[in-house]
Image (tube, rainbow, N blue to C red; front, side, top):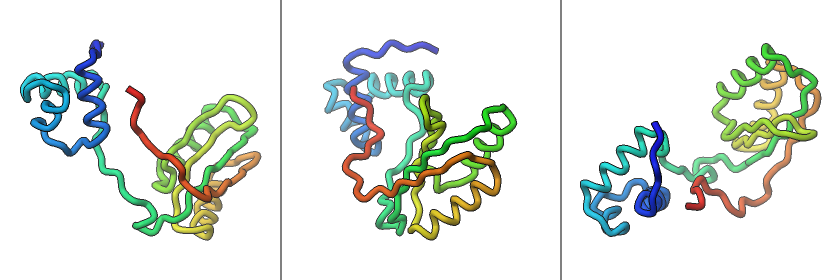
Length: 153
């Protein structure tokens, strides 16, 4: 389903990105509309897949996940069977917050959130026991400067 996005839709999306828990009344006030039209627009954007899963952002460090690693993976395997095993291994590990297939010298980059370096090593050992990789480089993030899932509407 294709939906055209206008300025009001963008205001609604910006309000939801800022705080999806706010009430319809608050969103309507922010965008200069009433509740029913705002709800109808949100419903249409959900049905069209523009608005996806709604969730809560947790504080990783407050929950003991103090180490964030960016893992660069090179592989000499590129067949469908290997890729299927690799994707299954990544999807089964909650430590992997993001995974991207790249163009260039590095094949994949992962964002892995764990308690500490020992927990990362456990993750690493489990991953390489399931799938063959040519080279793995782990980069420890010393400081998170910016992190957002908000799109620049």
